[in-house]
Length: 204
Length: 204
DNA sequence: GGTCGAAATGACCGGACGGTCATTCGGGTT
DNA sequence: AACCCGAATGACCGTCCGGTCATTTCGACC
Figure 1 (tube, rainbow over the protein chains, first blue to last red):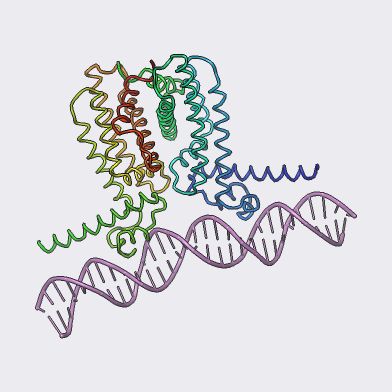
Figure 2 (figure 1 turned 30 degrees about the vertical axis):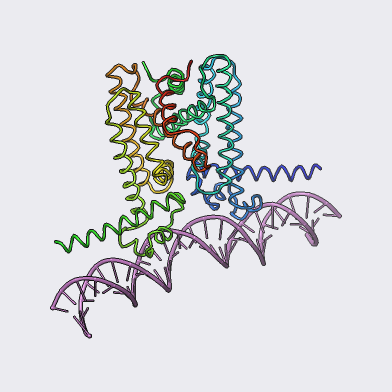
């Protein structure tokens, strides 16, 4: 049993090494341009070695994406379960998300790169599953706020869609700014701004 | 002169035929998977013929994208210049956009496909130029509304970003719904909903 | 040190794709 | 009808990439 565990551990270590390499290459080149060769070099193994642990390119990318998305969801769950008013909770969620993507920009690039993907259907599926979970969490938040009469008679699911759009946009712009070396606005300001618009609207 | 014009007209006709074919293929397969061979078949010409009119794949896609984006901008301009209150004007813009993409779904798919592109830099540039123009138009609209004291002391450019995010999201969801054969909500309702959220916010 | 089995790998294959070129084709001119 | 010239094309090339396989490498066990 000790031996077997050892082998398994070694195998899992190799697997995650390759997945880490895949994430790095995806972050650098995007999903479509992430070649097996480059992933292999990044992982410090031969290309054929990848095929010892993954059936084909699709399985590697699918499992890598699922891992990444799980990390994201897990990270956000702790923000979603915080107590407080709708404004407080929404701000916390946005803030946590900005922070997470600041620290894992490669993950965000992968996330975005998968958003509109026309290649492997499995990737789209994995992405849309995790995104659906995320939007659903937002919907819960609005449902609770509705119960507390913090919001009027609006469809929580529709609100969640709009909110996720706005948050997405903030992150995209933040990443683009960052790559231009001018992150002028703090996370806190950006989070407060978008939550303010969402809650109070544009009107005077 | 008559002869020359005739030749030019013929040439331009061929050009636009090929560009139309390129748009169709892009709409069907996405930018990355749009091969010269498939575009040629779609256009009813030999692959080599494309190279008579376009230097290479990049030039074909760039010019095709620019054409498409010009159509989009032109179409929206007439909506942007309508008179009325902020709410009326914004609703008109959103409505026109929904209608335009309903009628030119392939154009939207291409537009979205180009949004996050990691291939040809020229394409990204073309897209971001037209998108920048669009967001700028939105910004003008908010600036005017600010002058008319319809909105408070908020940065029009930032508002335009948020608004474009929300509108984009509505369109994406609309297209996805449509491909599932269940367009449950009318354009008017969807436009009114997103404008309502933008102007009045979520709060009760 | 020798043996064995699984892991790792370099070399290779088949196919797809962008791009080129010599040849063919077709309509206008004489 | 013969000729001409540019447009159109089929055949072809080099490259890249995913995937395979026979061979080698390496650590555990005797």
